[in-house]
Image 1 (tube, one colour):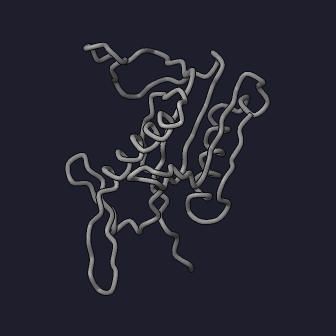
Image 2: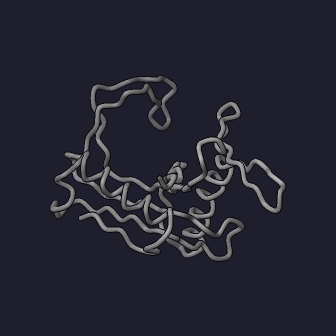
Length: 167
């Protein structure tokens, strides 16, 4: 089962629907597999946290057939060695996605940091989307812990959904 819930309008909801489409294109069986549960929640609020608004939270529990072929080397948790296995099994996921719908000219990388430009009243500033995404991980973890819930490993992702130009 794969379900999208929460806010239904705006770039975050559009990104959630696109994420659902991508997941189904990768694992078409997930829609009807009773062992698969994927929840894509739009507009999550982590009340009493310094970072409260989370654009999208993806939660998944998957059966053993959820696999992919990696294209990058990575380290397993606790290992010192980098490797690239022929296949990786995905048992569960908890991902916080920060959605940015800025024009391409308003997005830049400074080293490994992703920044987006905003303009207000003729003044522009660059906002650290990477840092924002990083803070959201801890907001979710702390929120769950404050409610005596099991805290999973949470990863972050910045989703770039550029604005489209009307022709």
